[in-house]
Image 1: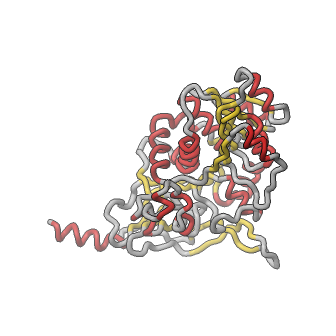
Image 2: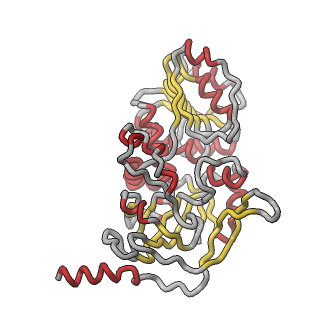
Image 3: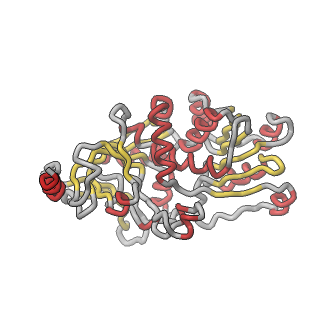
Length: 366
């Protein structure tokens, strides 16, 4: 019996969906005569798994703000690979893989740390040298993509419950990032929190915080997004073009917010957060500032009020597992964040919807 099972595992890599047509992918490629990278629809042969790897047939992949920044050349913290909020079904299994089989519905995390280095042991797993070296190949915006052996061996692939839609499951990665930042801020019930930015991750933060019993203010310059945030029950909407710090102080007995989570990369949002928290409060920079961003801010204000500034980058498996648990219980609520869906062949329209603010969360499908 053991020998038979061993033989089956040995030949697992040849059990795969037959893909006769070229595989479509959207990847970043240099524009003609320029160094700038732009999203390009390409076709290639279906990938095959090496030992310890799996191939996933993409069912949905969220379009993230960092994807947009990579397209604009503003984000250089990791490889120029787009599409990291991908989910789908296992279509092929490499030799030695026993925990997954063809047909499994999965979320594969694109970045996975080693969990053993000095930085990981200190709780800075997303700063691990290995974290940004792994990725989905050629990226999540592909009909089929390869998940490296490293990601599987380090526990970076989660199975998705059968009742969860793929569109909702595509929120696992961004929601995991929100779980991590809230944990770094040590927010508790009754705390007042300003979420600066009412985009998808801002609203995700707010929905998590409301469930925890926090009082949430959420700000943005977009009336459309503020209305959507209110409709989703994400908190008290504040027009970011008004005096947000004054409105937050007015709503907190003159103190200011206990915590501000800046879910936008704009310098104005960061300043708004710094000026909205109380003495001894905390500001978390979650949104990705463009490279070269400089603040016109008097650091003595930070010191004199004993405010604390922290940052939160990415998520690890502890966070994605927590996000999966949240979505398993509140999938219908968070699933409302997905407002637009486009196939790969209409990727330009997906980018336009996400960049223009007409959408909340944009998902790309095969």
